[in-house]
Length: 140
Image (cartoon, rainbow, N blue to C red; front, side):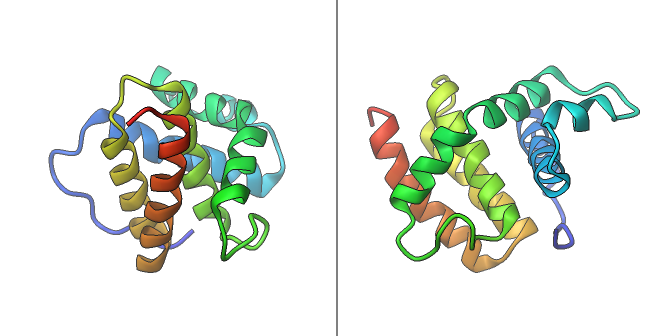
């Protein structure tokens, strides 16, 4: 992963949970292991929200990958950078399972993660894909 950019002071615990879940998903994919193994290997206790988001995104991986493939017209899922794939997986999981979280918040957080850990172009790409998927999976 790229070097992280500075975070703004005042970021909330959900933003931090998303970031940590992203790291766990990325590590699990990179090592070809279950995300639970990554969580269990942590020295410090892992927040319940991080666990829910990490394991939930992994559990819905086939469904989220199908949606990514359906809406990605320029890149196959295999050609996408791994960090972008996992940002999308996490955000799509939230769009489907965390209906209490507004669509705009989910998309904005995903775009910010893409900008921090990938590229400016990735942020735009993530925004476009998630906006289209949100219309399919959420009543807007």
